[in-house]
Image (cartoon, rainbow, N blue to C red):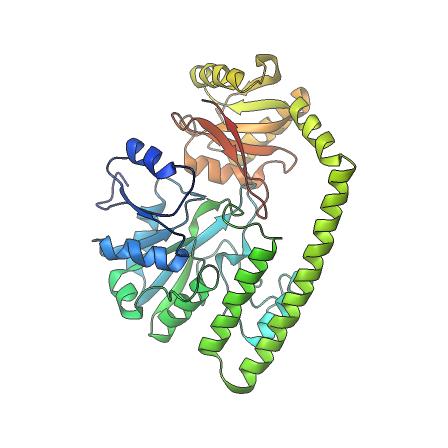
Length: 387
């Protein structure tokens, strides 16, 4: 925000870990709104909006990392478009994989059928079968799109005002589809902006294989259909959704059974023991490396298990990836920590997609008290507590 005149507003949905008190002390310039209950995503966004004063509104998830110039680029792109509605960005998960929900089409009955019954996965680049995720649209190009993700939505205040923000009947999931639809219905154009990707760790709010997630996700879709589809189309859509719910519930039960059997035979414990044996690579300068090693000692990780990797080629992601890969083969580390004061967030985001997927990526910033990362979009991330 250093080159932008603006404000940061954090809305907390009744966290139980006293994080609001901790954050207020660290960030006195930030406005915090602490809800006494979890009111849902859309309602929390509307609450924050009501105290905002800026002419541009950015709704952004807490489990994201953005490049230092991301907001400036997005604002420039927003004002360069004719009649812009919502601006969304290219999103990557914690391993650098592209997240398909970065750009989507409206969930028509046909598009939903192809998605629910796996045809979108079988033909990921098809204009017909992969229409929901716009698989035929190049991920690296800017495009007009219909639906953008609630994890990052930028728009002018007048647009938010005109559509009256999020529909608070949606508790979680579906509200981003709904507001995207209403913004377009109001005559604006939504855009996918690929030139400043962000990391969206995902998995931090809801476990994707849980019954709670399935109820919330499909419940939101049913609400969207009830609100925006009428007649035969609505009936067909509801039938597809209920079929999808039944299939996903069955797969979830099977997955849970396999997981429980694995725990019964202590497979997870074996994997955890193997993980503790893995060495660690750190991309850092000597000063930060020594500082972080001392902190990792308090977490029970021995200095002999840690190797420093110089980031001299960090501006060339492919060269840096080759360098990290060579070090990984030599020292056998399976965890890589990126010191985000030594290298920029822009460099981190550029590097992630070209790193080996065999290495678990974690990130560290001075003063945060932990090393954190998330390598899978359907489960919570991992943290090494340093203090």
